[in-house]
Image 1 (tube, rainbow, N blue to C red):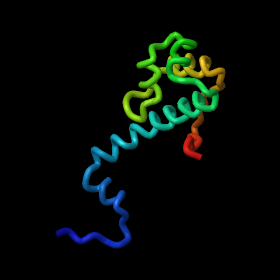
Image 2 (cartoon, helix red, strand yellow):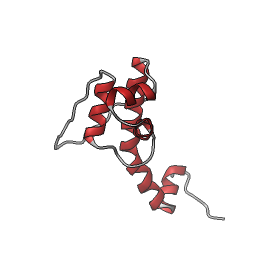
Image 3 (cartoon, rainbow, N blue to C red):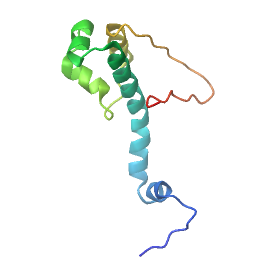
Image 4 (tube, rainbow, N blue to C red):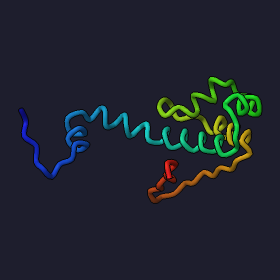
Length: 106
């Protein structure tokens, strides 16, 4: 059995042991942030996925994939259609500095 330093966390040991998993988790962070914000917007408007699909012209299965926590990051066009269907607002920020996404869980 391998002994670990008490100063390393479980997540640090996992990143060291399985860098492929750590990379995949990081890749999904952006998708999760977008999906959570879309779902929060829809919930705030009291809409169902079917409502958003009808208003946006997207299929309900597409709306579901946009809200999925994993998978490819959606296109800007899909996000814009979803947000418009929910009568929401969005902004794109481009910066030379690191940008923190709002915590959708807060």
